[in-house]
Image (cartoon, rainbow, N blue to C red):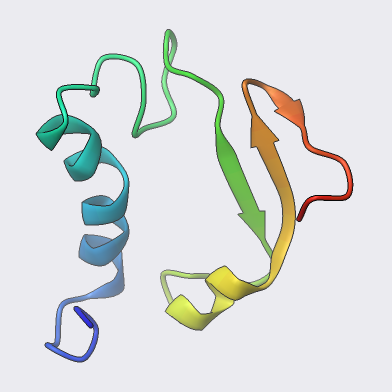
Length: 72
């Protein structure tokens, strides 16, 4: 939706991660890659900064610092 409105991909990804965490009052522990934050990551093939559709090519999900096997 936001891409359709013309927002750049980096801003859309920020809105889905760090800005959302901040809005929910969770920015001290999630929404970014930093010391003290939960290690919840989605690794994808491709570059979502270039093409948001690459977010559908999930290679691995890391939850709480551990890979989730067979769930990507």
